[in-house]
Length: 255
Image (cartoon, rainbow, N blue to C red; front, side):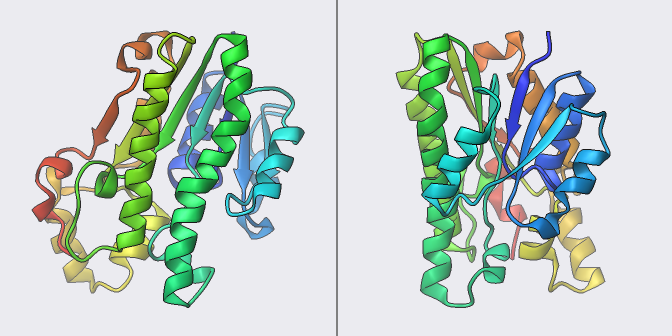
């Protein structure tokens, strides 16, 4: 049976991989984008007609979150909280340090909380649903010296939210999972970690990672797809270290 999937931040990276995976399964996907420059129309047009819809969402604006929830055709069967800012991408929004810290926590943690609070009651009333939160190995599982404090704090907040929601929803039919990706081949990781490195330094960093490679977005999407299946419910409440081992050996990644 086709499900309705909401993927926030679904225009690139891990979010776009989620869109691809669920559309491939025959599900209907609603993706969100922040700015028109993310080309939502062309992305939607690349899929089968009526399988994908795009909605604008700014997690830093409660009014935008409310408008999204009102615009959705119905309550999603699977809610994937993927949208967020990183320590480099926040620089595109503000060049003032204290504003960057505020935005990272506001968008990544509070905005996600707002959206979840608006959609979760309908899931509980229906007695079913899957909530998948995307955190990060940095903050959600471990910590890396020299990385942005507010970014790590926001990702730690997501992991905390996932565990707490899972505790509260145990007997509701709504399942909650948190995925903490490691070094993933996304524009966000490139901007935060690889951008200023020479070609040789970039190769050296990647070679030092577990398996000597970056994780691909489709690998995270495949994990999320499993969690959204009937078999995934055994992992209700899990905060999953999806870093190929970086989470247990964080010293491998030096910035």
